[in-house]
Length: 128
Image (cartoon, rainbow, N blue to C red; front, side, top):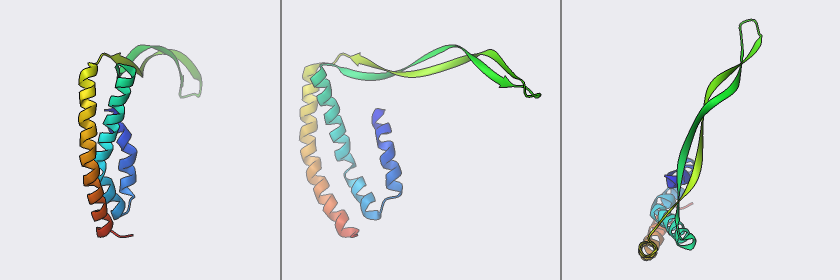
């Protein structure tokens, strides 16, 4: 889920990009996803555990102010809901995580070759 939020600014920039930039963004997307997953997996191995983000909801009462028709301000108690994100450690199998990292690194080599060829094609199709 965090990955989707991380790509939101990229999506906005693509809307304003030149055809060559749009092409380059499209052909390198898988490589960027792979790089993100490698970084995340490596961080998990370095820490020895994964971090999952959860939302915690709390409900309570707050002081609320309101203005009536005559312009008088009154203070009353009102219900409130607060949501906060909390990082929660998650146990991982380090052997499985190392295997995942090895697979991601092998895939990165393939994706880099594909991206290099596709990038050259984009530059040929859409010269600036």
